[in-house]
Image (cartoon, rainbow, N blue to C red; front, side, top):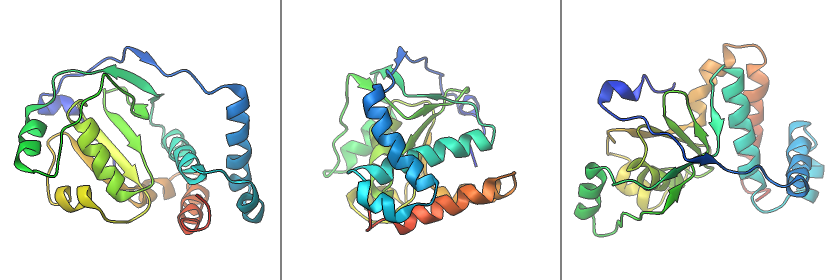
Length: 202
């Protein structure tokens, strides 16, 4: 399910310069109420109180629970400074007129694993491919996890590429591992329920 280790491929581990500050109590409480409502199965109530971005927040929480359940150590919200892009991505961008290799001063993936791998979480499959291109040129190793199948420019271009240090992955690929541990089926059912809510809540 996870990486076998980027060291075997000659990648260099990076250390974050810091970790993002946690949300303010007021903002956290608003999201906690929405997430708790979903977790408790009160879907009719959730339809009344959800905010834009609710499914994304819930998905992030479910992925976090999956990591915990599977015993995967991680640190949330690391912040990395920009370094020179991986030449493989520079070459790929130059070959496709529709792609521009955008760089930023800082990069903030969702999770950092002990071996230095980055994990990014997003609802959309196409956005997952987009983030693959956005973060891949900076990450020693990157996995982008998605739940909603869709299409778009980045998926069309990248789906047949084998990236040297990165991959996108449907959350369903985690289900066999989750079903093999205690309480895993309950979490899988929650992922399935969230998937059904794609056109119901934002």
